[in-house]
Length: 203
Image 1 (cartoon, rainbow, N blue to C red):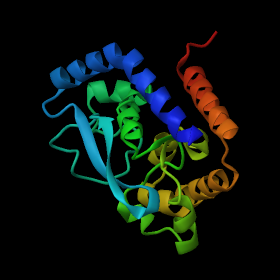
Image 2 (image 1 turned 180 degrees about the vertical axis):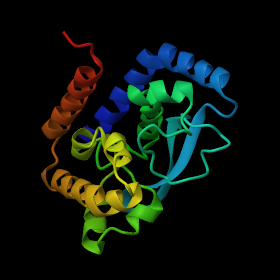
Image 3 (image 1 turned 60 degrees about the vertical axis):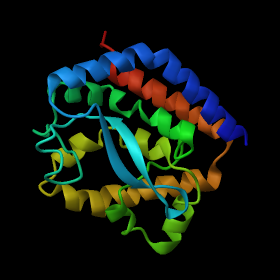
Image 4 (image 1 turned 120 degrees about the vertical axis):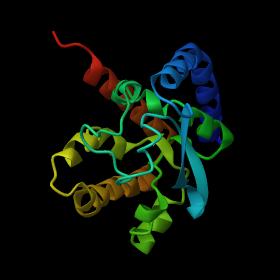
């Protein structure tokens, strides 16, 4: 109950504070390339149910449906606006709406597309999907440079399935088993520090 109340209050407050920035980003996306402002994709949520995750669109409409579902390295499908909003994780901001409506939580295992969830071992699937997926989690922090790492692999899809996904699932299981409100606050704090440190200018 406390977690859900915090999710609602934090998300509502954040959307209000970020509204001017989000409107500016939406306008930039619309001017930068043809297509909708928001990108919607089916993900697997709590209990195995499907929902549509929201993101600011960062790819061209004529290429977004092609190629792998993974985005790796300097993907040519990414627009000019998309490169900037992805760098600063601004493309994730609409997910506060997903949190408000109850599809997601602020902290929880990142939701995957169905094709990757189908690869989960049954016991892992049951555990990881027993909670709402989140905007951030331990795996998001540890694998914040996932796109760049996969971009250096000769077979990004294979590297993700055989190396990255199992490691992320291990962190997801750890979160579900050890989760607490204080732990969620710590993860939110770490996520903010990592984002600030990564994008702040050096000395």
